Length: 206
Image (tube, rainbow, N blue to C red):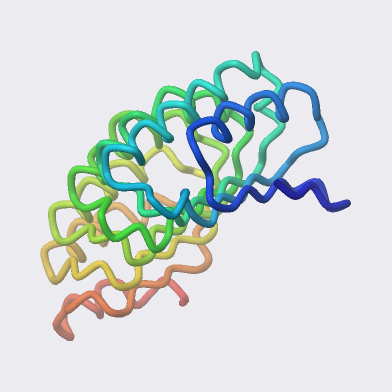
């Protein structure tokens, strides 16, 4: 693990033991604002990824409020829907989170998007940036995310590129985006949409 002077904690090749240790670090180091987990241990399969996510969730909760100092969480580590569900109880403790970056987790899929909608996003009302680029959302997942966005009144930047959510997903998003009055940047390319669906999203700058 690396803790540089910019108060960010980077923990590559995260293991189950390391995930629990994250909670210890957060509990004793109030200055940590950014947690970056670029990958899991090399041998991690779907089952072990869920165990690691569960351990990380417990680590968040074990911080007894100190984890609330976290402003940025970045996890590009092959999370699937089961791992995300295991992680959800701990993520609900991240009340001060302003940036959530789960990009490049293609196994998340529509079921993972539903977990985000029902169990995670409703608790992260301070979010300013949300990045779900290349998470395998598809049309159903985009509809779940559209519902989950409704409470994110401070959201300024949204990245949903390369999720292949096609026209029906775009239409669901287009119905919700006008309510996000703080939104300034929305990236949505690489989703297999027709021209008409893209036009519905054009008013939001990329």
